[in-house]
Length: 190
Image 1 (cartoon, one colour):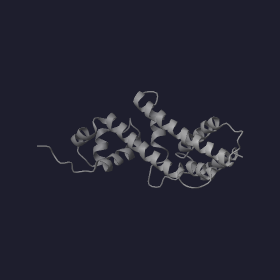
Image 2: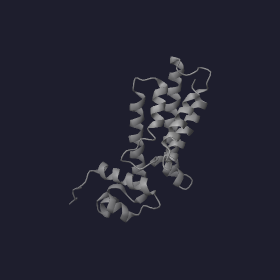
Image 3: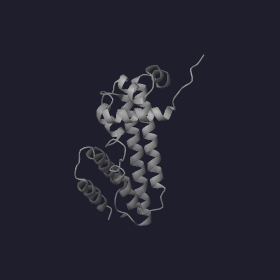
Image 4: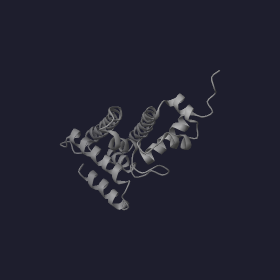
């Protein structure tokens, strides 16, 4: 007879996200996951698979949540420059979450070692660049952003700024410095 699951899958997966995000993949043990997620080792294997499969499911869930947040941001009826500012500032506001970005951290830790992680990270970055590219095009169409600026080059530049902010926030003690980076980056839009 099949045993009833005594946990909600997304709740325990969110706990796995937190632990992997705080410690990274290599430093997170199966026993640490058992303790932090509050479920039995057998339940982890039965529901998610091995540690790597659980890690990939955690990355996929995190990425889906982040994409939803970014889509909601873009759907706001606000000036494009303000939306891009909010996009950057979302990297700084992590109340109740570890600093930085789980996707960025995972790419730095495993991107060269794990093709599956590398592919997920690259796909996530491509989605963010496309979002930025589309925002820039809208801004050019409405006259908010100078038409002579190359939207593809700007989307690459802003992606680099976003990744930098998501990395720097882990160690920066001067939040004014991070705000200054955002302000300076936005100033190139005219």
